[in-house]
Each structure stands twice: as C-alpha cells, then as structure tokens.
Image (cartoon, rainbow, N blue to C red; front, side, top):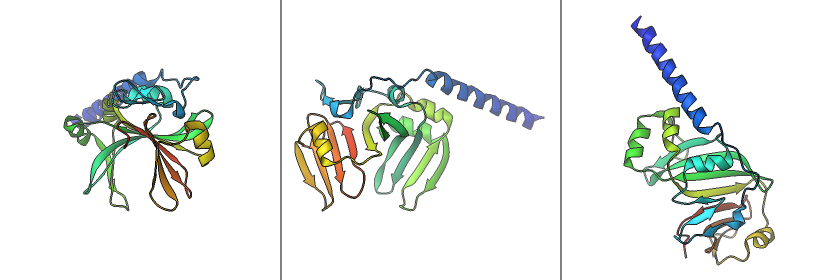
Length: 210
C-alpha cells in the first residue's frame, strides 16, 4: 500500500515537472528575421553579440527562442580539465544553411551541487572524458543560466573565399598545423577554425585573443 502511494506520488511529480518545462518552452518560435553570424559585433560593454545573444548576459531560454527547445544538455569534464556545461542544438538553420549550435553555460558551485543531485546518467567516454546528463528538473534550472560562448558548426563546407566574402579579412591568422589555422575577427568577437580536412567551426565568445 505504501509502495503504491510512493509510485503514485513519483509519477505525479514527473507529470508536474514535464508540464512545467512544457509551459516554459511551448511558445518558443524561431524568428524569420534571424540575424546572420557575420553580423556579430562587440558592444559598448565589450561583450560579443551574435544572433542578438550577448555573451555573458543572455540566457539559455533566450537561445531557445532562436534555436528551438529540442537540445541535448550535458556536462563534460576530466581529471585535467574543468567541467563544461554544454547545450547542443543538433539541427537548426541559419540563412537557409543547416548548422549545429553548441552553447557553453556559466555555472557556479551552487549550480553544480544542484545538478549533481539531479543526475540522470554518468558515463566515461573512450577519451577518458566524463559525460553527465541530467533529469528534467535540472534542465529547468538551467534555463536562466547565462551563455559563456556560442559555437556554430555549418553542415556544409565553407571555402576561405566565402568566409572572406562574408566576414572580411581576418584581424590575425594563427597557423596551428599544415591543415588547420585560426582566423581571428577581433571587432566581431569570433574565431573561425579553418580546417582543410573537416568542416569549419565558428566560435563566438568574449575577450577574443588579441
């Protein structure tokens, strides 16, 4: 009898949590006049702004209004690396091009403690990195967390000519290897990873390396 009551209460709580998440995200619509990544800029406070999202100030819920509510959220960490809380939108569109978007969120010790109490699954990947996923209650708590950085991964190859046509000439180029180079656009707050063997990656964050 007691066990059946516990099960009923647990199911009721699950329904309440799911309903709350639905109510918070149900009206999210991707705008038709979405700004383009090459229109990013540094605002008067020195923060990078892209897609009308301000790094360090805009929150996850703001991003969901742009990219939708379907996202994979996980924390990645290892013995040698500080944990990162990432939100992955696997399939959204920018200017008619399919892209993946990764957000890195800002969180503190209080957030970490709460998340650790709401773990859904923890597994160690072949690289040794720990991947932790969370339950719905934890995901709701993340909606107000601020965005630290935004990474854009186009699903089509962008040639150097196209990038220069859209972004202009880079402020600085750092050669990492024969096939990989970093293009820095300081006034746009973006670093573009140019990879001759893989797709390009656009990283928007504050304090782009000079």
